Structures are given as structure tokens and as C-alpha cells.
Amino acid sequence: MPTSAYNPVRSFQWDLARQVEQLEWLLKQLPRYAEWGYQELHLHLEDAVEYPSLPGVARKDAYSYSEFAKLVAAADRVGIKVVPIVNLLGHTQYLIKVPELRDLNELRAADGSPLETGQICPLHPHTMDVAEKLLRDMAPFCTAGKVHVGLDESFHLGKHPLSQREIARIGRPAHFARYVTRLNRLVKSLGLEMGLWADMLYFLPEAIPLLPRDVTAYEWYYYTFRRMPKVELFNFREVDISTPLRARGIEMYGCPMNGAFRFEPLPHFTDRMNNILSWWRHCRRIGAQGFLVSSWEPYRLAIELTTAVDAAAACLWLEPEITDPKEMLARGFERVFGKTGRAAAKLALAADKYPFSGYPRWQINERWDTVSRREPLNEYRREERHYRQLASKARSISAPVSLVASLEFRHYLAQRDVFVRRLARIRPEAGATQAQRRALAKQFRPVLHAGLRAAQTMWRLTRDARVCGPNEAIVRHDSARLVAWVATGVGLGRAWQFCYEVWNFAPASQCVVIEQLQPDATWKVLQSCYTIEFQSRAAITRGAIIRSHAAAIEWDGDRPHLPKLRLGLRGVGEVKIGQICLVDERGVPMWKSAKQGWQRLGKPAWRGSHWPEEGFTLNTTATLPFDPDGMGSG
Image (cartoon, rainbow, N blue to C red; front, side, top):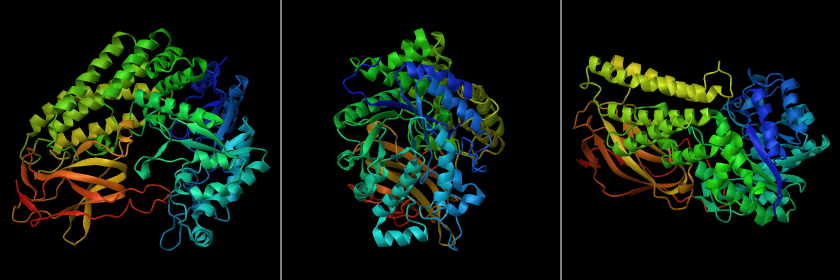
């Protein structure tokens, strides 16, 4: 039995909203989680389950009502209580996608009609009716006696005319608190308790004294921290909402995360373990009622690896004397994979050396023409060798298939980084002949095949083999880009590139944009990229990460008539821009900014208690223009 001086409710989460896992695989995991001392299972659902009262919501591959009942009953048999997560504010696209429910949308067109994307409006006359149907359908599965209603990341709050009028009268914090109160009243009428994510309270702290006392707040943050969780939009400054929540008498759960972010094919295991330890220490300090190891967007991962992280977290109560994160991970891998687990954990930790993290790295998944010709290749070559060796080592020791395939896919991404950057140095118009392009493509084709096999293996271990997973889709898109390049010589950027570096010296949520003036006097976006890195080393108030960026320029090379360009910043925060130049097909600067050194864009992020304003669709800060008057010879 678990032994620990601190003994919260121990919970784990499956995010089934992004992908459906094979039901039989899920059923097999439940006795293991019970053995590891977990008491609750939170299930993030959205449209992944059938709602009999709203038949249009469930997607094609959703769990049927009877299948879901089977899962919940199996959890109950091993002593694990279930908490369904039914999103009822942010992340409600699963409702708005249904034409009959679209009018619930907070976001409206100029003519007042609902847009196709957004979130539901708290004051729409049918919102509570829809909420009641969803909650009644899920009530039989709330074996823990509670339901979680989400409410996180609801930044469209206050866009609907009805919301605007109420906010004008009572303010946004009271508007939010009133909705929480109405939902809580509905949940209580079903004999349940209500949980909600706590992140909106960072931006609306005045709502805390207005909240019902019998709700449970789930505070989440997914990086390492020392004292208090931090807030990205506040330049990663610590924010204490636990004190006012406890003063209000509201119970809390602390929520680390076990997996990866967006396009990462592997968890960053060091970050994950340190995040878990940070939360355990914080929960013990504040006496949090519960500890939830959450899971998000695992569709690019082999989910067995996040299971190993959950098993490692169980050391906190099974073996509280073990406090070293590496040893905890080794024990977790042993619990999941048996005798090969310890050696596999060592390889998993080694994979952390070169994180495939952050939007600057992920651009290549969508576009190859943003690869800078000026960026050195040596670091990418070292990365490729590193993952080649790790994948080889994993095969040689008969490591778990999920880890072998993940390392092989990570090796594919590293090989692609080198290959595409080599191709980017070939001028489309006057570069390689078609025969030469064919030869280069032939060299890379085995790499594509290996990447495809790895992606399919990762997906098919626990998911429907008939479905094309997102990693497989990446490889197939890469293959199509290569075919197009062989046929036409284009697709890797134009002959000219606008290159620059971004120093994310004050991390927040910035988006750097480069635009080109068009003949009709409008500005066309050529390239944009968020600065968010999704790493603990970047979740700090002062950062040292510098990334190279490039945009393909529409220009005929007529030097007396340089293209008119500008850099802008959207979002929240400020960055520094440097090494700005226009380069030719070989990466040689032809012109560079007359202003030397780092130039600042944006304004400091808020220091706290601030509602996020619009800033991701328009340039809200000063731009740096580049035209013949502002450029110097290279």
C-alpha cells in the first residue's frame, strides 16, 4: 500500500479527445494503474464519446455509450473512480461544429451570424439546456461523484453581444463567476460535485471571492518551478492563486503533465519528471486535496511512453524515499516494460539532448521554404548522428517497440532537417537539373520509407491501423513536397530569402511576422512564427534562446527596386531581432539592415492580473520597415 506523509487523491488522465485508443488496450491498463496506487481517472472527451441526448456531437470513431460504460465499469472493478471532463466554455468546438448548435458560438460575423469556430456563449438562451443534456448523459459515469467542466483557455469570453452587455454592467470577473455558479447549480442538481481548470483565475482573480465554495479548482502548469506555478502571458512570472482559493474554502488539485507538446514525437522526460516533482512539493506545501498527472495531445506519441511517466510518478507515494527523477523514471519504465525498462529509460533520457520543441522547429512540418540558408548545418548533423546511435542502441538491446519506433521517427526528423537545409541551398531556377534532383531524391527515399514505418508503428500499437496518424501524415506530406521539387525545382523557397534571427529574451506569447508590400498597397504575410519553445529552459523571465528564420521573397532580383518588407510582432511580449539581411540562392548576403545589433520589437508583457487583449491577428506593436531607404549594401 502507498505510504507517504502527504496523501492526496491520486489521479491520472487519458486525453481521448484527440485520438481514440483501442478499448481493449485501455482496459488492460486499468489494473496496472490500480496496482500503482492511482485512485481516479479523469477522461478528457469532447466528441470522442456518444451523447444520446445530442446525437450529432459524437464523431465517427467515437466510443459508443455501451463501450464507455464498459470502460467505466472496468475502472470501478479495480477501485479506480472516473471523472469525465465535459468542456463547457473554452475548447467547445466539438459543439459548435454541429450546425444545429452553431448559434451557441460567442463569436459572430459582422451580420450577427455565428462563425464556424469559437467557443460557446455563457448567456446564450440554449447554453444551459445543452449543458444539461451533456451532463445528464455523463452522470452515470461519474463514479467519483464529480464531473469536470473544463472552462480553461476561454479567451473569447465577452465577444457575444449578450456577454458584452453583462460585462459592461458587472465586469468580466463577475460574468465568469456567474456562469460558474449556474453550472455548479446544474451539477449539484444531478447529485455531483463540480471541478474546473483554474487558469482563467490568473486573468480574473477578482472572480475568486465570487465563486461557489463547493467547487474544486484544478491548477495546471507544465514546466519546472521552485515556489509557485508561472503564467506564460505574464512573462513566466509566478502567480499565487492557491492562497485566495483556499481562503475562499475551495479545494484544489495540482496538475503536472506526462507527455509532449504539439509536434513532439517523444516526451521530454527530464522536463516531465521535474514538472511532476515541482507539483508534488507545491501540493504538499499547500495541502492540495488532489494530484492529477494530466495528459494532453498524445496523438503524436506512442502512448506507452506516457504510461511509463505515470508509473514513474507513482514513486511519489509507493517509494517516497526515492527523490531522484532519473531513478524514478527507471522504476516507471521497469513497471511498464519489465526487465528491459531500466536500459530503455536511460535511452529515453538521452533523447532529451536535442528537443524537437517549439514553433521555430515545427515550421518545417508545414513548409520547407522557411528553412534559412544562413543557418549552419553542423548542429543538425550532430543531432542526426545522436538519434541514429540511439535508435541503433535501442534495437540492439531489444528495447520496447514503442521506444524503438519513437527514436526511429525522431531520427527521421533529424535526417529531414539536414536534407531540407541542404536542398535549400540549391537555387530553384538555375540549380540542379531534373536528373540531379532525381538523384538527390533517390538518396532520401529510403529515409522516407523508414520514417513512414516508424510513424505507423507508433500509431498502430494502440490505435486503429486503418487511420492515418498525424506523424504518418507528416511523412506523406514530406514525400509529396519532394516529388514536387523533383518535377519542378520549386517548393524549397524562391531565389531570394529574407533572413533574420529572433532572440526570445523575455519569453511570453509572441508571434513574429514578416510582410511584403503588394502593388495594391496591402501587406501580404510571407511568414509568421510563434516564439513559444515548450521547454522548461525557456519558461523563464529572461531567455537566451536565439532562432534563425527565413522567408521566401517575391522579387525579380532587380536591385534598384528592392522589395518593401516589414517585420511585425503580434501577441503578448517583446523580442529582439538581429542579423537581418536579404540573401541569394547560396545564402550570401546581398543587402543587410543599415541598423546593426539587436533591435527590439513589442512591449513588455503584463506583470499580472490582466485580461488578454486581441493581438494575434493584427500587428499591435511597432514594425521594423525594410526598403531601399533602410537597407545597406552587404
